[in-house]
Length: 221
Image 1 (cartoon, rainbow, N blue to C red):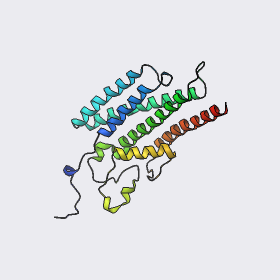
Image 2 (tube, rainbow, N blue to C red):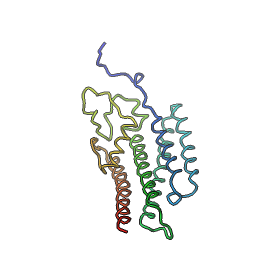
Image 3 (cartoon, helix red, strand yellow):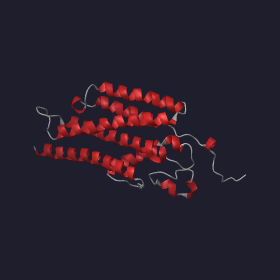
Image 4 (cartoon, one colour):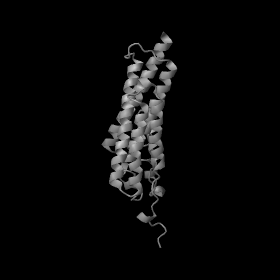
């Protein structure tokens, strides 16, 4: 028997899904903590919508209905993405004083902006995890990571030919993108991934730049 033979599909260990589920719930939790001027409608309604979408997502995965699982998973991530974009837009209005008769405390603005920045990291980590190499359901059925949209360092090491990323790797990628506004140690290969990273960097840069401008304005007043 060849000791270097690749494992069969039956021997492959499925990628854990619970980190992504925790991230989706965390986004809903952050939304509940945001002030009223950064939300549209009742905050509890958004969390209920996310949970209602997660239930069929989990059930379809448990029963091996991968196409249905992908549809509900993308729908859930789309909802949280729209929420982030709307909240960032409302934050911009608050920071530039577009809301008449309202002057938010600097501490509240800082906490709100930090929460949205963190949510931005989670949301785009979910997108990368969901779309890369066909998504987790597809990655579970093959050895290694030969068709990924990202060139992780492990993929260049011959001794790690069977390595495949999971949600933590995409979370690390997303965190670096929001911090450095560009890829760091993971080159981007696919055009869709480049577009998503551009959008993530733009949102992160907008929040950071407006906060810096607001801080200068407060110090100079």
